[in-house]
Image (cartoon, rainbow, N blue to C red; front, side, top):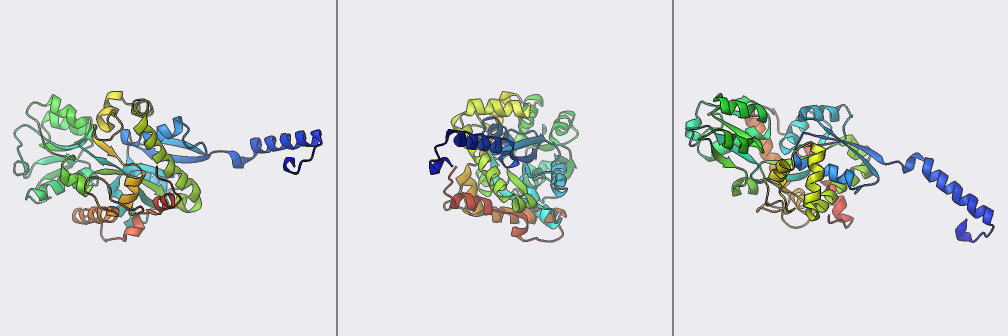
Length: 354
């Protein structure tokens, strides 16, 4: 009415009052709730930055700490979770089980935070033959150890895999119950400090592991969330990359936000993601939007660490190969059933660059 220059003051005031009342009470103006879960890990803490710095004001980001990723996956299946931050190896398993779960992003790469740590007296893979090695069975740690054994000329099943999570594996190593374990930080460093004579057999910063992108975290979304609330799904992915970009410019404050949200010490957060925002001074390399889009094959150019454009497909096939070896899969399922890179392409095509 104002634009048509109706000059009656009472009409203008009435129109403005009505408009303000409408935008105050209409449900359309409410922020969209997005339910996100992940375990206690600094690499997932960027959701707290997105929320606390109000980088996505149209989203109500609800991060729930759930230490068992399978619980998160089951919540997705029950349509009670929209997004899961977790490790990248699960996509082929979700595809075989017909779970409505899609790997949509390669979030970060282990850059030294993962280590295979040996007990005193263990010098190499030959010394581990027939001995117990602590891993999370059915998880990325088991694949890492198995690949390391084969790369060093020993069968992947030449050791006895023992299903022990990291904090319990720490006690098992100190107590002499296992000969080696795959650890992420801060557990690996703590074992090396506490157990005299322990040593590192392999760590994820080595060029082979970074180029193959073996040990990494990913972002999963509920397939129904992508389909039924598509614009919200795209906005959620953008919020993550906006938070990462903000952290790169403000690493000290960002790390404090992550530490508070994850209920971790600043020291442990810095040990994992570093202090200067480069992702090169910690144990985890955080992918920005373009790097992740290139890994997905949704933007031109190559990702870092001698990786190739579209390597997400090769990584999915690599995980599938190993789950078939271990017997966790019975069939080889199509890449498209487990992975959705279209959200990255939409953002890139829209002009977004992170």
